[in-house]
Length: 225
Image 1: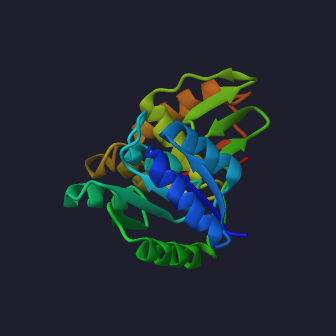
Image 2 (image 1 turned 120 degrees about the horizontal axis):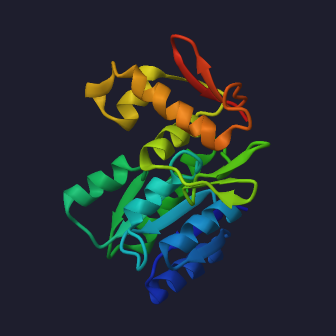
């Protein structure tokens, strides 16, 4: 049975979508705020996510950002926002489709069917990636070691997140520098040496001989579980 997560803070709309989707054979999970949405996405592993942007706790764009990397379910944004800048921001942050409120139920259901087809071949990624030393929660943007939260700076988190999302793959130095600092910093390789050293001190059992945050000499870095 296809699993759909519907996120909206309007109770009447949430109920209408749940009824219509359930009647057509979908298994529906609902959430009324962004925090619950991220938790439900990690626990229920939906095949499609329907997401309102105007949520009471965190903006839907932030929810989209929190889903990136580990979530492989297509996301249909539902929003009363009609400005093109909002649509561009949502699509650039990972949305697959954008539906403006109010909308017709037949059109909405057709978009859901299309999203299900798009998502068939997308492999899931764990929201929490655990090593023998530390765990990275991509949804909550939190790192723990031996059960305690590890404080990371925004830059340290950005580097770690990119490496973890590409687990097992080589991430080039230029790619990392561009992603974290911007294209004008592609030659500042010492930035990476400094920050990887800091991450290893915080996360590796033996920072001088890391087993998870690895350097590929002359090329880049790799995260291994």
